[in-house]
Length: 152
Image (cartoon, rainbow, N blue to C red):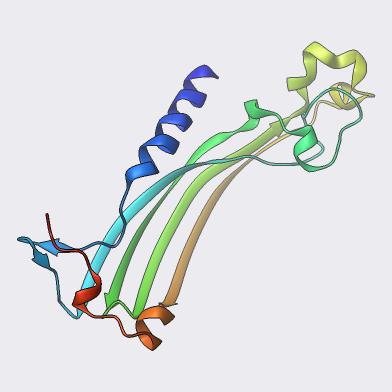
C-alpha cells in the first residue's frame, strides 16, 4: 500500500512542471498545418458497490471506499491536430475493477452479514473512444506565432 501511495505521489508531483501542446523544432515554432500527437496516461480504477467496503452496514459513495480494491489502469491515444483548431483523436483505456466481501474479515462482527454472504466480482474494462475536438480560442480568437514565447 505504501508503494502505491509513493507511485501516485510521484506522478502527481512530476506533472507540476509539465508543459503540453508546446511544439518547437530547431528553436523555431513548429508551424505545420497538421500536427500528430501520441501519448498515454496511467491512473486508478475502483468500484463503489455494496461488496467489501468498510465496517458497518455500508455507507454511500466514498464513505465506504476501500483502497485495497483499487487497480491500476492505463490509456493510449493518437490524435491529428489541424492548425491548432480541430483535432481527431482515438483513445483506448484498459483496466480492471473488483470487489469482494472477504476483505471485511478483520471487522466481520460489525458488517451485519456482509462478510458472511461472501460475494465477489472481477470485471475487465476496455474503452475505445473516437472524438472530434474543437479549440474555440484558436478558431474564433486572433492567435498567431507571436503569442508563443521564443524558443530557449
